[in-house]
Length: 306
Image (cartoon, rainbow, N blue to C red):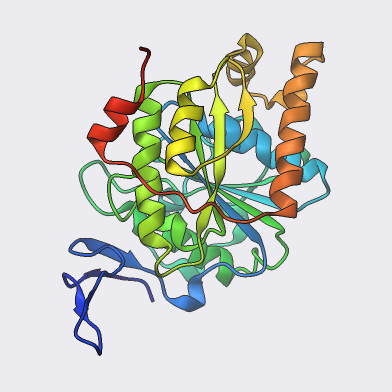
């Protein structure tokens, strides 16, 4: 059972020292260990709102599928547009279908909320509670619980969580309770890197009690990366892939298509190759990054041009 509880402000260890707890001093969604994802490699994709997380997630899902992996993508945004380039439509969310059966989960079938997208990628949109109410973590928890009840995770090699915007509460950090690696999508600008720093802090907090670790940075819409490189060097991060600000990427969204379905050009072929390289590297795995979040003032002083 999933619970929303008030976490006590610290605890006292046997030697009398105060220890920090996950989500210290805040309302957190705690997953039952039986509801955590096991068996598949799980990636959570984070980044500033509008930075291109859904485009990145969908094309990465296709790249994994082209490596022969069975892939499930879970959108965690109330807009439920994470998977539309894979399915060519806005699919109903888990919350939508749960409402139709008055939240009696036993009445649902997998085909009520799981849709097959391009190249066999399975797609789920978790959705979210009505604006100003509820908790995004509850929605993520219910989605994973349904997938486990219907044994859909047993036949999955890769799970990708496409997560809503910046980390602003424990609910938005809920996918980190399931993930092996968190990936951060950023651009070569102050606002994106500022959001990335907050995400690093959230992953630091979750890694005290969960297996999630930082996997790396994906530079998106970035012709150059000098600001990202400067931040990475100080924070302890590494860029795993870079995608330029290309019109073909914008057009793929308008055509409701992944980049792997667009007409071939040398420019597009290079982008596809970069996604394939990224998927292969993530599948092989590597040592996690021991990054440390910076203070806000330190980021302000670090970035920019002399």
